[in-house]
View 1 (spheres, helix red, strand yellow):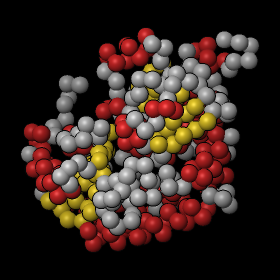
View 2 (cartoon, helix red, strand yellow; view 1 turned 30 degrees about the vertical axis):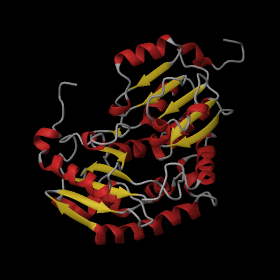
View 3 (cartoon, one colour; view 1 turned 90 degrees about the vertical axis):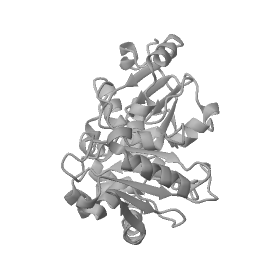
Length: 335
């Protein structure tokens, strides 16, 4: 360590000059924490499929910090909280032996993990207000009333997308340079995107109402080929007490993981967190990994890419597994 090194390096935090983070609010806030520690670090936003496909391999080396994404053995610092992303004991030992630093914790959000790791060394007080919201959104703790109210923080979260990289980096720059949540929300360059998110939710709501059906308490929403996206909150709020979980199909048959404006077909699975004791009943990640070895996430929120022969065949198997959920999707309490 040289005289110009920041003090946290002495506490086992590695040097990094590149950050690769997920493209949702959790990933962005985690990246903001890391960039606050090293303002000169370049930031790339991605998603799990890009990492698992090898599309980002050329960007990843020992000077790379990866957060809220699948484990990659060639990065230098790995931070995450997804159960299916966690390296096993042998992988983690080899990673550390090879010079990597691993922070995996079952925190409500990856941003919370990064925040807790770096808070003793740098001033992150401007992020304290948004952290509980990030935690709640990422861990399914938003109430149905908060969701229906659709306040500006939720709209900001929905405005973040790989389709809008300039907006993503603008929000990142504001948060990483000490701007408060209210300063970000009121920024003239941010407000049009918040309004866009509000309008897009209205369009997504119509698709949910017209293209969702419930099979044995699983709400299946077909957003594929519709040009809209949504997380599970919109579908489970619509389903109410009639569904324990939902499956949302997104993307296009001719889409690709390399084209954010026209993504490949994918499926997302969410527990109905609006129900009392609605979470931690079933391990939905088993659905996400039934066909796609690169799928995964949390037991309550996860996703995968549609695999051959196609959506209908995938759905048929998932519904069959769901109907046998007490056996096939039972939470493993021994882990």
